[in-house]
Every structure is written in structure tokens, then in C-alpha cells.
Length: 235
Image 1 (tube, rainbow, N blue to C red):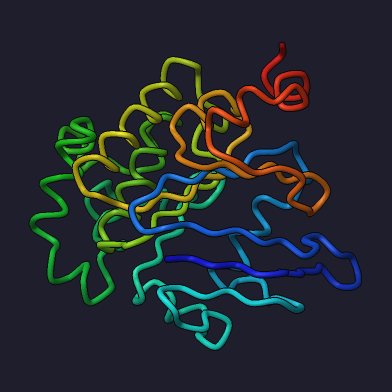
Image 2 (image 1 turned 90 degrees about the vertical axis):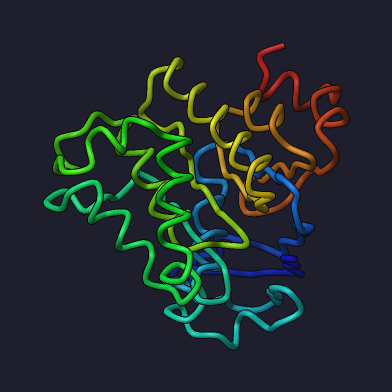
């Protein structure tokens, strides 16, 4: 579904991604893990088009994504749930979800999508009229994920969904992501610092360090690798 080849991205003259290659197959759950400053969020911004690629290629369902402007990429079926949630604080929970349904597919499937979002995150139904800015951090993350799902995506990209959350709420979020993947057959690309949880959920994983993919493999291979165990799993 998503194929990235030799991707280079820069902030000014500063290289952030260097020759990054990764693939996400339809229906897969793929995790990208690594320390702060590794380039994980930059990778997502380049896929979404908010940061231009310096070189390399990104293809989505065979289409050259770099030839598609950023505002058109969600209409292809790509939803980006950003780092830090970034909900519309002065709008209600329901209005935030409606903002995600601006794609053609999102408008077509709105009633069904809203029903499923409420099934996965019942608190959003209970707080439908509440201003999103008054919610807890965990509830805001649910709103952000729900807003992404409201667009009827084919690929859901999640940038650090556990950031700033308690371990219990972060675990709840990861459990819901597995439910969403199972129930909707959705393809998920996750960037996450909680490496154990990210790999436990994944079919395939990539380790990104200083802008380069230094390791990749299925969940079992990465969890068994001594370097990953020492650096990221505390073993």
C-alpha cells in the first residue's frame, strides 16, 4: 500500500531523514520506533506533505504521492493523527469528529463511522457536546484518533499516541487500536517511543536512529535482537 524508497528530508540545510526505505502492506500494522530526534515525526510530515521531500520516492497504492499536494492526500485515504493530539479546543467533541469527515468517503460514511467511533470510544458519545479543550489528555487523544477515523481512511498514521498519558490510559489506547484494526481491517502505521507496546502490536517494525533505518524485521525478530533489548526494552 505504502512504499517509501531512499527518502531524504531536510529542515533547511539540516538533513533529518537519510535514505529511508520502508513498506507498509494493505492490512498491516507497522511500527516505527526510535529515540527522540530520530526523525519519526518528520517521516510522517513528509508522507502527509507538510514537509517536502528533498529526494527519494513515496508511492501510495501505486500512485506517486510526491506529485499530490498535501491538501489532496487525505482524499486518497491517508489520515494523520498528529503528535500532541492538536484537537480544536474551542469546538465540541462532535464538531471535532465532523472536521475529520471532510473527505468524500468521510461524508459518505459519516453515520456508520460515528457509530463505530462511539463503539470504540464510548466516552466520546457521552461527552459529545463538551468542548474538546476541557477533556483530559487521554480523552483528547481519543478525539484525535476518532477525527482521523471519520475520514474513512485506508491508512491511519499515528504519531506518538501515548505521549503524556498515564500507563493505564496508554494501554487502553493501544488496545483500542488493535480493536480498530481487527474490526475495520485498517492499515496502521505507528510512530511510538513506547517500544515494547509498539512492537507487541506490530506485524513489522523499523528502528529509526539519527534519520536512518538501522534495523527492521517482524515483531519476534526485533524483540529477540540484543541491540533492541538493551537500548529500548531495558533488558
